[in-house]
Each structure stands twice: as structure tokens, then as C-alpha cells.
Image (cartoon, rainbow, N blue to C red; front, side):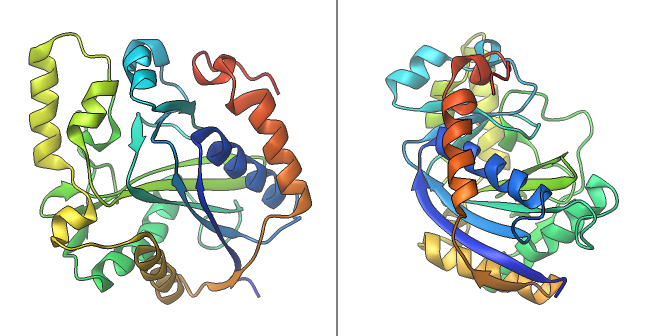
Length: 274
């Protein structure tokens, strides 16, 4: 059953645990211990995830973020900083030779985006897949411009995803905000002066939104998750079976949390202590 997938809903966790769990599942999938996995989760407290190559102290106001109760954690995936707050996050983890993921990063990204597109449209959102905007969006924040095949509604980016390939497996995870809080995000970024801050504020107000801001009604965690389950099932034929983390995955999560994701060495300096 090539389209049999494990479905996980791990609920709300802190950012360190969420990123450790994604890598633990990636390890298990790469070793053939678990099936391809779709995971949904949320964040408590609010967390900024840094792209793999970002320089934390150059782009994030660490003092302000900590004063606001925001965690800082580095992702395995590239891209720019994302504030995870009042959102649903998904991760898709499967062998790199899986039919839905083999080929180029861009081609697999397009296939996975079809499920997101179908899910959002089922909620009544007039959503489209963006074409990339070369030369734009060079700032610290992910949502200031859509990349190839990311979701837009009313010309605004409503989802941001990133992908990495490691150990013969693929991890793609994405931020699906219900509300996009521009002021909260700007309070955590290190910006040179007020002019740059206002310019970014204007850019984000034009180009980013949450699904509830688009629909002008309340979509909750469970409703959005179910819409996406239906979207991927319909577009890619996934047969999703609810499951739980294995004992090995739980052990790896704890180990990665202690040795990597809860450390300044990894989060601030990209030094892997594991």
C-alpha cells in the first residue's frame, strides 16, 4: 500500500520539542521503522523558528523576544524566520523515493501544495498557488513574499513551507496561521531603524494574512486539519491512519531536545552538539 500514511496529531508543545520531534520522525522514516507520516501540531509558547542558515543575533532581537515570552529555535529546513503563534503547523515526512516526493524539490513542493490548495478551497477560501518572485523578499521574515507554489489569497501569502532532504528522506513542514500578527513579529526582529520597520510593516500588511482574516470567520485547529487531511487524500490518494509516536521516536525526541534543540549552540550558532 504505497499510499498508506501514518497520521499524527501531537497537539501543542514548545518549539524545542516540536523541532526535535520532526527530526526524530525523520530518523525513524529514513530507517524504515515507520510509514510516511503527516503530523499536525501547535506551539506553546509562541516561537520563532530560524531558517537553517540564518544568523540569529543579526536578525532577531533576542532580548525583546525573550521578554515577550517567545522561544527561539533553529529548524532543519532553510528559509527565513517564522513566528509561530495562533496557527496550525504540518509536517510531511517520507522516503525521498516516495512517488509524491521524488524528483526535484520544486516538483515535490508543487505536488504537496495541491493538497493544501484543495483543503483551503474546501473552506471557501479563494486560494491560488504563487509563482516565485525572484529578487524580492530578502528580509528576515518568511511571510514578506510568497515563494514558488505557496498559497496566496487576495494576493496575500497565507501559508509558508520549507523542505529539506536528509538521510534518504524528505521533511517538509509549514506554518498555516489563523491570524498574522504583524506587530508581534516586528517586535522580535532586529531592524536597523524605524524607516525599515515601517517599510516592512507596510509590506507585510499588503502581502501576508491568516486564513481567518481572509474568510472573516473563525476556523479552528481541528477544522483546518481535517480540511487538509481531505485535501491530501483527494489529490494524492493518501490513506491516512491515525497513529502514535513509537518508543524509539520518543527516545530520540528527548535526546535531540537535550543535546540539540534546547541548546544555544544549535539555536544561536548552528553548532550541532548531538
